Length: 229
Ligand code: OAD
Image (cartoon, rainbow, N blue to C red; front, side):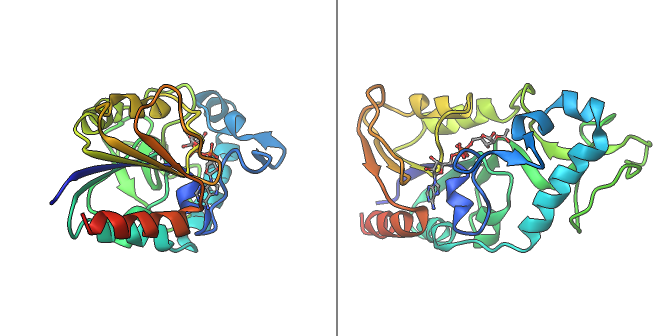
């Protein structure tokens, strides 16, 4: 029987595609903490530094491919109504074929105008430069939710989580709010699976099964099970 399956993904989802997670490594970039470059304050103080940080990450993304976990989630759509809510700014879910993907923290391949937030474009190449502007002359910035900025998609994400019949949480340390709070919107009786080598059962979340495996192994296994429901 077809079910509404809500999937919450984090950096561990894309780790096997070659994209580093945030908290598994030293979290440093050129001796800056990620929190120091991913902020409106950093943008105001040193726009070139922030552009360079995201240019490097975007360049890497153009060279990465979806991994078996991304493809397995796309396959899950053959039978179920799958809604992905991702903290990731990469486009690997979409490239694997997932149709309903909500990005909580923005999208690396997009840029938007600092003066006209509705002007959002898809970048065809990795480099965004000082002087790249919208037609009205506003500088383009990465279409990313920085630390300290509101998360516009969180209300919609909470609504989706509320409607879940099954929840999968994949590759996230569940430390960054409001994303980490989404699990609490899921109905108490809905089955919850947490796939992450560091997954732990939670004392505050009921019906949660921890699957301590990498996404590339644990997700295709669970998807096979869910396809046979
Ligand atoms: P973290 O780096 O905090 O957590 C990554 C998780 O992935 C950890 O729990 C690891 O155990 C797990 N992991 C590592 N390799 C894995 C693999 N192969 N398969 C499955 N899991 C694996 O990343 P997030 O929880 O996504 O925000 O971080 C949340 C947010 O914090 C990010 O979206 C970003 C960051 O600051 C912004 O940029 C706004």
